[in-house]
Length: 121
Image (cartoon, rainbow, N blue to C red):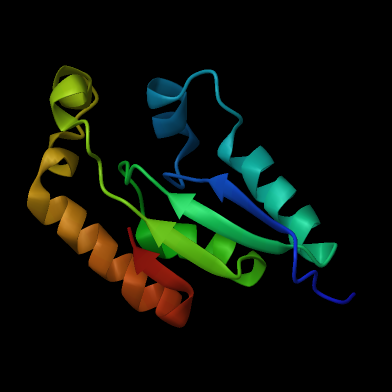
């Protein structure tokens, strides 16, 4: 199918782990349903992009593996509200994901894996 040059659809996918999503975004669609929507849109010739924001606890390799074939570009942003989720992250043993080093490592890994499809915003 021909790609649409005028239509673009973006989907936020901040993690590959639906357990993390359930804790931090309990009323949002599952990661699987977001991926299914992305696949359908892409297969219909619509330019698709993913917003990895905030960068929640994740396996970047696994996330890239499932989104790469279905995105035209990716925007990456770090966790900008760390102070608001510190207690929740500690409770769920995600404390390391609160550090600047974690954010830098994840962003760097995502940029490397996504090659020319990604940029940090």
